[in-house]
Length: 479
Image 1 (cartoon, rainbow, N blue to C red):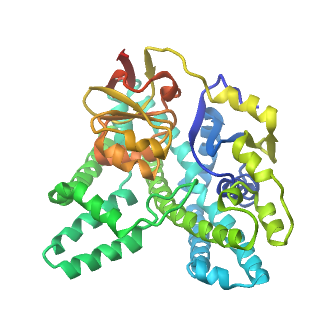
Image 2: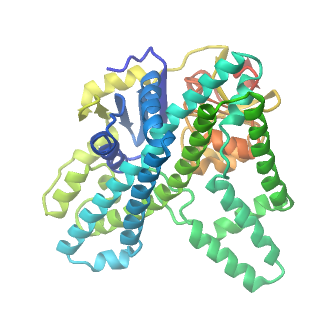
């Protein structure tokens, strides 16, 4: 069992449902070892009241990541094999699901729908099996880059700045690409029909932008119109953003030469960069897959006595049973209200329920305590800043966020972008050099500290804090 007092990697708690995360778990815990010869480390997936928390031993995660990194990312021939398999699986999945609409799915007979759903599940598992490679590899790559820096400069005052620079990906994230594309539409402002047409095309391309493991939604044309109003002042910065990226890459290349890195060390940095960009593009695909899963479940809800919310707390075998006209009484609703855990012990994926699950969850989801200062991993440097804390633990709470506050959250996800843009600084409980908060905060040039462990429990709304990204510390100045 994972020791709760050891150094942990904790993702969440964040909103999420059982079904979509089970597909991921089945792929990485059951199928990944068969395909890639490595087992993932011991893992807890804790579900409670539609929130999820992923827990690993950080040391074991990095150890496994290192082994996978050398085999499947550093070795370019092996990496190419993985990419070919991943692209094939992705193409097959999207070619199959692109036909989905509620009208089409509802028109299928029960027998045809069952076969359609089974095939979609099979294709999704294959997507996840190959798509998991950069995720586990990046953990190993981050550690290897940190080890390189330690050998070269020790724990000098430049360590955080160098670490950040060496792990900055060469490509813009898909969030940044979307905003740049949106801003370019402003050039058609004086041609109303063309402007409207370009905006509609943009909406059709990015309607899935705020999807997550909890729900999917189709973002309207008005959403992008309003977003354009908010960010239009950045229109003149399109070129500067691109130039800024070029400057960062130039500085990264300069630092690599300055540190006199050998061929092996350079290959590690290049491979990590490759993995980070790959994982980011994969994220965009996942958000689109969330939409298609919702379409399937909505059609199932119309065919059965179960609601969409209930179906999202089913397991795949139960979905199949429902489609075969079998009743699953009360199970899904109970899972939504109680603690429910996927536990992977390096060999098998097991379920832990009821009181035992609650006890285990209590070991990792901590209660509040008073601590004056907390520390974490600096992923985006900036000036030392002071501000009032705003704790955000759910999408619904984002409406309470005010520009200039310090955003403190378990982790960030797509729907947090607006708040991240307005934040004076960002603090997360979990995360790493390649997590969502790290990638986006660098692009927005907002100071950010991740992996601060208990930030959302130690800090309270309204606390005045000082955020120092040179030391990686958050100090409470007053309540």
